[in-house]
Structures are given as C-alpha cells and as structure tokens.
Image 1 (cartoon, rainbow, N blue to C red):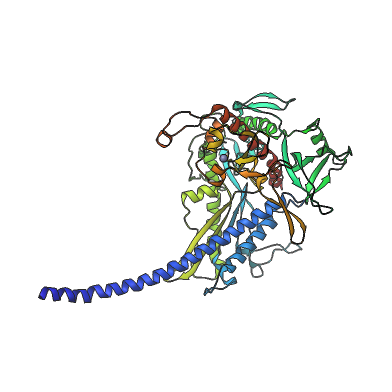
Image 2: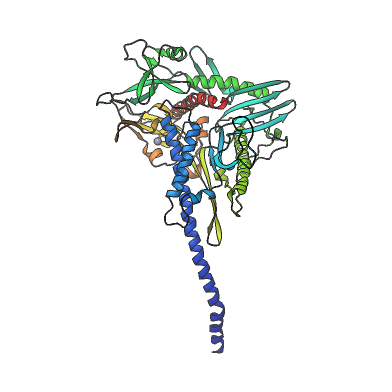
Length: 576
Ligand SMILES: [Zn+2]
C-alpha cells in the first residue's frame, strides 16, 4: 500500500511537472514548425517564380529581335522574387516590404559566371569623376558586378587564368613565358576526331559520322488577315540567330529570312556575310547546317593547342589572387586537367578530371564570394542577427555547379525561441544560356511521319526497340510551346517541332511523361551500356547495337550543333 502511495506521489511531483513543461515546449515547437513550414514554402514559391520569370523572358527573347537583355531579365526576375515573397504572405505578423531585410542575398548562376544581388555600399563616381565620400554613398540593393567562374594557375614561367563554363567551353588568358595569349573554345579529346574532309564538311568523332544535316521548324506567322499563315522551314544558325530558307519565294533577293516578332523579315542583299554563309549551305532546295562539323573541327584544333600549352597543369598549380595555394572540394590532385587524351579525361564525361576540377573551381568561387557578400550584409542590415552562409549539402552543390539556377536566402526572422534560417535552390532547365547533356530531345516518327514523338536520349524504349524511325534531334527549347499574339486576348499556339499538314508532336510516355529509368548519358556517348545484373537480371552488353548507334549519332550530332550555335552568342557576351 505504502509503496503504491509513494508511486502516486512520485507521479504527481515528478511526472506531472515534466509533462507540463514538455507539452508547453511541444506547443511552441509546433508553432515554430508551422511558421517554419510557412516560410519554407514562401521561399520556395518565390524562388520558383523568379526562375519562371527568367525562363519565360529568355525563351521569348529567342524569337524577338531584342537579344542583349540579360541584366534586364535578371532585374525583372529579382522583382518577381520580392513581389512573390510579399504576395505569399497572408495574415502574418510580418508585412510586405518588411521581409526584404531578411534576404541577405540572391544568386543567379549563369553559363560562365554569376550575379549576386544584395545590399551594399555603392560608392560610385560623380559625373566629374570625383568619388563621393562615404557619408554620401548610399547603401543600395543591386546586382554586384558579374563574377566569372575562373581559376588562376602558376607553373614555371606561366601565369594564367582559365574561365570555365557549365559545359566544356573554356577561355584561357595570361602570360606564357614572355608572351601574352588568349584562346577560347571547346575542349574535347582531339584524338577522337578523324577522317576530316573539309570540302564535304564530314568527319568521324569517336566512330560516328558527322555530316551536314537538314534542320526544320514549323513556324506560325502573325496574320495580315484573319488566317494565320504557317509552314515548315529549313534553317541554319548564323551569329546566334536562326536563318530560315524560303524556297517558294519568287523573288531571288528574298530567299532567306529571320523570324522576328512572328513574321518574316527577309535578309537584305546588304547583309552580305549572312547571305554568303547561307548560300554556301544551299543546294537544290535543301539548306544544310554544318554546325556539328564546325564544332568538332574547331574543338579538335583548339584542344591540341591547349594540350601543347598547358597539358601538364594540375590542381596543385592553382593559386588565388594573392598567389596562395587553393584547396578544392572536388580534389583532382596531380591529375593533368587539360590533357584530354589520357584515360578518364574526356571532358564530355561526368567523372573526368576536367569536369571534377571545373566543378571545384565554380564551387570555390561561389562559396568564397557568397560568404563575403552575406557577411558584409551584417553591416547594412541593422539587425543584431548574425547573417551567414548556411552549409549546402553535397547534392545542392552538385545542382549549383551544373545548372543555371537561382539561390535565395531567408534568415533572421524570429520564430518561437529561435530564428528562421533557410535557403532555396531552383534550377532552370530550359534556357538560352547553356545546352546541357540532358537538354537534347530525340524525335522518332512512324512510317508516314504522321505520328512524331520526342524522347530523352537515354530512353530505354528508344535504345532497346526499333518500332519507330529516329528522324532528328534538337535542343529542348524547340519543344516549348510558342505563343503568337493575334490581338488583345486572342492568342495562337504552336510547337516548332510539329509539322504542318502532318502531325502534332507528343512526349514519349515512358521517358518524358512517366520519367521512368533512362540509360546513363555517359554510356550513350561512349556507345556501351552496362546492365547491372542485380537490377535487370542480365549482364554485359545486351541492347540493340544498331539502334544504340543511331541514337548515339543523333544525340552527339545534336549536342555538338546546338552547343556550336549557342556558343557564338556566348563568345559575344564573354568579350563584352
Ligand atoms: Zn522515350
């Protein structure tokens, strides 16, 4: 009896207080978690909206005559972020503009560098050239100067910088002995390029035949009357812009046109360079793109030059601005970075030394500059909260160093007993900045071409079966719906990869719609697919070899061509 009473007393004295404290604590935890969840979804939605805005602007600019508008697009996207952040707030204790101070930075990672948007002390020169003194300078939100993904190397008498990109394009500049040099291009394994016939514009790359190809788009034009005109047109890309061929035009001086603001702008006879380039690629009523050939032809020469110049340089030769050695998160040690003829260093393959080092340089640059930008923000924020760069997970870094993305931070909002602190990374997979390895779609068609379907290059159905013909391959942007404004509230839609009088185009049920398992793109590039016996119950090379070669040819040709066609614009932006 006594013992039972003891137990009761113990229960009242000890268990009760603890459970009270516990429930009180849990309640505040739940409030915190609810708030935290709310802020998380607001941050995600706003960042997503910012990426969407950027994506819509760049995809639409593709078909408009305004092209040099990157900064404007980003500033519009920044505004979208803040508007969205305030719109997503309802009945919160924190109001509209009030959330802005809790965003220490926004980052836009692009093809060859990135912008950090933050508040900083903008000391700018007056018109007469005098610099304002500190008391006059204002703390302003704005885009800080563009930062390239660059790494500096010092070896022997050479001291140079390499600007990296999201793919295998690089620019090298600096001092080599007593000479200053700049060179730019795509780094590949030059030994894989063989049988070059410049007159015919043919070569073989890693066993596949690269030759002139015919590219087609379906276009819809703003109607002069009620009926919208449309048609299938062959095209090439010159200076970053599509040039279409109009075989039905009866005027000999009006055979080629740009598709500007949804109508034909015939290229005038005074644009001699464009016309010469186009005429040299016209034969009969066929218009041939040589971009895939040009890509490998130029990349082969560039790569040999790079190997001669810096073939022995390794990560151990990397130094910072002060000349101190750098440690990288992706460590490639003393493996030669730029000698692409050695084992495991084909820059097109994910795990290559070149690619690992590339990712290391980009990560290092973003991390260093972001730590500084956010730490600086403390002097402008007016809060006692200590803003700092959160630790990104490995998979987050993997996304950042390989994608166009927006990174946002929201920190220092009091929730319960602690402060909210989170970040959000949203990548942009459809843009005019980069042709990633997975940005190519492959088109198949049935016998009469009435049924067209597009696939991811690693689609298992595509590689394993031979039901439909592989007809062409394009960048994923050619599969984005385009909108033509007829009048206020009246719009027409089309897809560049549908065909007039033939077909609509649909995404493959297996790979696009269901996003089922696909083969590794590195395996497609290498032309060997290794089945995992535990997964498939089969081992070794068990696939339709002919079909794989067709997929591989279409894929590598399109990847090279789309990169070459985009590169011209990127080169322009690099030299600006
Ligand atoms: Zn498919």
